[in-house]
Length: 307
Image 1 (cartoon, helix red, strand yellow):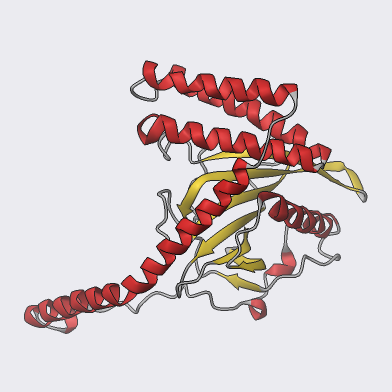
Image 2 (spheres, rainbow, N blue to C red; image 1 turned 90 degrees about the vertical axis):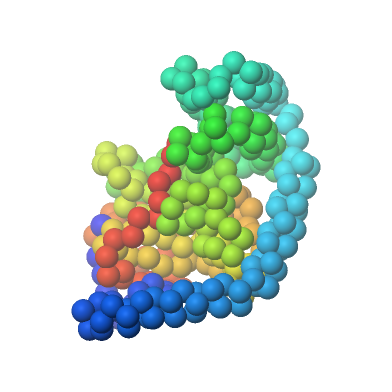
């Protein structure tokens, strides 16, 4: 799909190198034991040295979450369909009194509720008005509150760590017969990038994911992520991507500011459309501009997306 990305000259290091492997046979057991003790001591020293930075990251995360929550609290639901959906979400609070674990019946109810939300999200996004975007954000707020209420036993990350914001159909003017789709997904909480647990404030986490697929084919050929880390006490947000060929890169850096869903959506749509034109043209049309591109030495799974 993306032949122009397979170019080693485009690569930049992304701190993915691993420490060299040591040969345990090169020293006797006492030396290996001493080495192990020294390594453990060094790890403890490094952890202690990072404690002030981690504390700064945790404080920054609390401020960021409060600001995001305040923005969501200002969102309002105005349409009849939106109010009907809000009522269904409120009724779902009663599930906690009827289920002690995620049974099949419970799972089906959850799936139906989120499917209804996805349909309304998709409708609202297509309207492209501030009022519709506000209503979509308000429904997101209600879903996040419901998930918090149900708790990790009824709705564990292993069962559902994200939900669809919308599915966007994309076509090229140069080939009407090929249809593409952008699946827009939000994680319930910052998830460890290469895993499926809530990431700590200073760790690399993922916030949103956008999967670009060709409708007639299977898996996505390009996946966009909004990722965040806090390496030196300041948040670093960026829009990155993964694609076939073990390729990882960055499209846009937001810095300390966490972008809204709508801001990211607009940029991803622009990049997705340009990527589609590149694919349909057989590589003759350019790919979107990137900040850096890295060809990884081996595939790295960014972690499951449980919908």
